[in-house]
Image 1: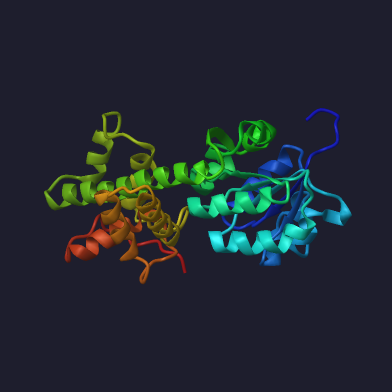
Image 2: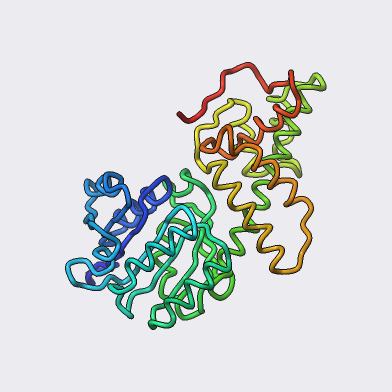
Length: 307
């Protein structure tokens, strides 16, 4: 960023994903003003050089000065709306609002309209790659924005991943739903394949190794296949987030007049897990499958589950 004045970013939501993304922005030389509903989470970034604001409104106009970018990484669309409305009176027309939360496409379009009425640019830029990708700066970033606004934010998005403009505002969330449909479906298929291997008498560890390099190879088989074998269900992405995303897939399909039978099956699989392991990793799809097959269990190691 040369010798020019560092760009200022209000980062709203410094939880599981927000913290590593904000950390990378600080390391890249951006001035970050952090806010989180649980203040202690935002305070964790102070050691890395972030300023901590007492409210969302204070963050977007820190010490009376507008920020260049506002980034939200929050749990759901209704929370994004609450935070946006709370901050709105303090947002300058020169700021660009980047929502990286996973929300419905209809919500992203509503956010765009709300901000556009005040002359504020909006980009929906959800990500895929989990906490590991956020920490490594390798997230897939799916951006919905005008060509002009995307050009303005591309360098910021490159700090934590590989951004792609997929269309106008709202398109980023649609692309993220496509991603989550593929992820959710693949996780369930991998669970079925590994349990089938064991039930049929093969070594599931060796079967996974044999499949790698063939047409079944994928990042999900690599990472989450190993998680299932290790029975490590400590969260990267969470069951409750995947379930919410699958619900939103079906809503988007309905809006588009589509019947997606596989998406309905995957949605049901994750809904069944919400009562028992909502905070577990998405790979807990295996636990749901085992419940449907009493007496069968992949491997012998104990489960690692969040408290």
